[in-house]
Image 1 (spheres, one colour):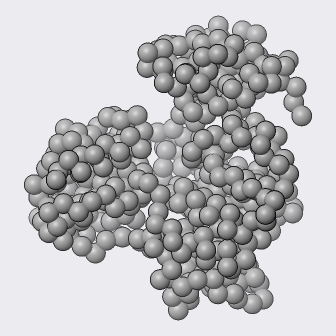
Image 2 (cartoon, rainbow, N blue to C red):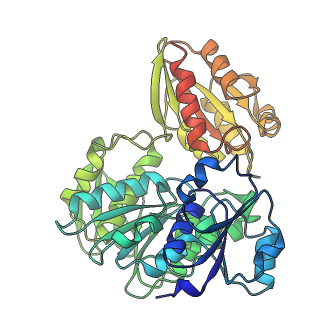
Image 3 (cartoon, rainbow, N blue to C red):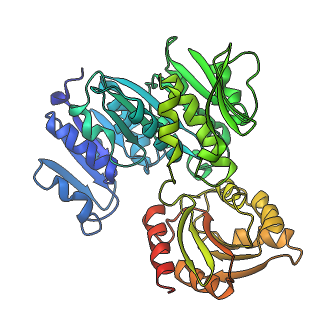
Length: 458
């Protein structure tokens, strides 16, 4: 195990990952410098848990002198590896890591890692519920990673008999050199191209969840997603799959047949649950359940635990979350949709007349496929945020008069305009397709603001 007392670690990014890692390293005797481009006033809430620790804070900029005497640089998920300070660290031969990799270096128990362009949090939450339902009396199941509190916070409480389930983003994976014992790639579709530059670089980051597995580890891929299943040649251990239809070539996996989710072990099939047991809206969520069943089975969970974990699950906040009914129209919060592909999945979850709120900050992603779906399925669109010109251009190219458009300055005006258009039995859906950073701290703050604005319509 690494002796952190000899290390001077520069942590870039004072969000939850950077703060959690600062506490972990301070407790182990490291000299810690925490750096962020924001000033002390902007970070007051974030830094409160660190006020009694011997940490050097350098805020407001990223001077290269920070690297003098540093033995390791750790970056938070929102910090690009291409920023000048990180590039200079590489030039000087200083190792660059993150909290997820440091956690994987020391975690004493079996790990499950889940990544994908969409569905990570829902699937991770489902797997956590299933594994808690099926865990032994002396086994604790930990769920975290890219969601909730960083797992490094709990490392001293985790025992060898426990199970850790991690949601892992491409931002975390691109620096990682350890793979979980069970690794799942749900799907790979265009996302975060503003960060990774190309689809090839984005896929390579996702693939790292497989790259360091061992022969006795297991990988789970989606048969119906080319980006996922195309990585089968990189699998180093056992392979399982999930998808709509029966697995081919006797590969173990889950599928849907006659409205029943079944698991095929290579020889025989086992029914797990019926589709009616799934409370989540949309075919994309059925795929998430199929994935969760395959992952949980790989972890040794039995059908009873799988059914118990899934049957009463109503979803995760900000993911097709029902907010309220106002004057007969149902309002849904899908603030997590920060890519057009996710908005398309949300639209397909509804058959009702639909008013769609889209926009935010663009991630250098194409909007044309979403525009074509809007032409077929949406009655009215309210466009907002920095991405509005790009979205409006895509919409005008396909528009044949079937839907109407409003342009709002921000979310508050968008809700007002949507409420003026909404009629009884309509669905009003916030599923932006862009990030929240043009108006909010994150997608959660955007979703919470949306909830408040909708409640205020009464």
